[in-house]
Image 1 (cartoon, chains in turn red, green):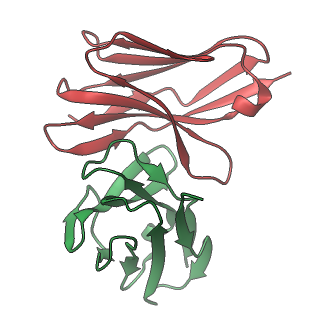
Image 2 (cartoon, each protein chain N blue to C red):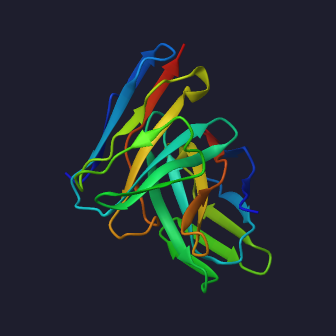
Length: 111
Length: 113
């Protein structure tokens, strides 16, 4: 199957860490992505990880990939109100040459 | 400024009235794509184009047409819109002929009554 699954909502307190999880099904995925969608805007590429990597860190963002379990996570350290948005994970399937998006996780940050 | 632009941003129309949503990118990207975003379904690809005069169906192409006569433009055409095409539409482009690292436009919210 092609499903990419995410939980729909996450609520965190400002200053805490947020962890957004994603599971995918296609073992041929070569790249996995995290996109951020702010209200009324398009998707913005946040970061990506190649399938032969376990972890990638970029400032406050840490991406963890467990290829055996087909599990991807995005950790946002010191979450701020400006991080409130919908976060989409996506996998690029080389077998089908397609980019498959998850349903998105709405992150709400409260003071 | 490097960007993907879409017009219009908002459109309300009636069933059966042909419409076109334009998409343009100024980054000389080869790959362009259209998605629709619906609650609980994420983004689903409608059509994509790997280069000029090359277009292919995505996952939900029914009821849509596209064309790629120039590298920068990739319009989405609804010949006879229906209410189930009410959605938020995104155009995206990528610097290579592949769909990863896509840059998205701001979206077009279409309502068909």
